[in-house]
Image (cartoon, rainbow over all chains, first blue to last red; front, side, top):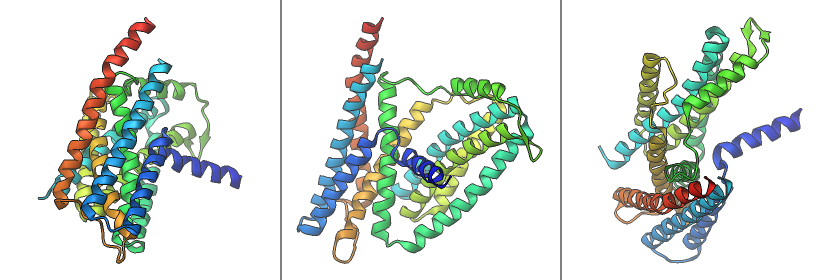
Length: 76
Length: 259
């Protein structure tokens, strides 16, 4: 009963936040982790950090859309 | 009124309107097939629970986290949330994914409700109560998530609440006037706009929040401050436009092959 509740609770939040493409969430997490290490470990300016992180997020989404398009085209 | 405020009001209005359309469709299907008493009881119960969730979550976020950490956490969540919408909207616009059809949802919900057994608990039709409760609670949770994250980050909870309330009011008035699922609402166009706005604010705030890893936890500043939001929005619009343009012929070719 408790295990079922925990599994259901976890699944609900996974579906709610991550949705049906975990790769976007994973990609964003990787980009932000790299951004965090740049902030903590280098002297890069805020401008450089924000532009690099923004470009990284755009790249992740582009890759996800291309992968989604390939998958959708295969499934038609 | 700054860009943050205008974007905030518009984002919460559009996002809540989409969620209200989905909730309204479920409630209407249950009301017409299982009776309004149990359906409205389920809807009211969900609304009460949502008020509690909103109060607890809002209090916890305001009091437990420093500003940059809050920006990082809610910005990242908003970004992932918005990107899911944007990705689906791009695939739908290009024809690689079927459009979401509220009429079809209404038919499916109605058919499921007709086939369900009639079980009565506490004087209520249990199926109608549970389905309307779950539908309203899940869609309402998405609205609360957007209102809290936007309201806290833009320091204007009243604007976020007003935007979401306006979205809900528009859908309710239109829904009751038409007395049918709002299939004519161009849902994918609205989801496209919401996906762009959520992704823009999510990108902006999550990157600002990286400042939590600095000495002193000061937020990372984008070049140009809040005006950078327009640049981020332009980048997402450009990426989406290119994606739809490039993918559309591919989708047409695949359909032709299948035929």
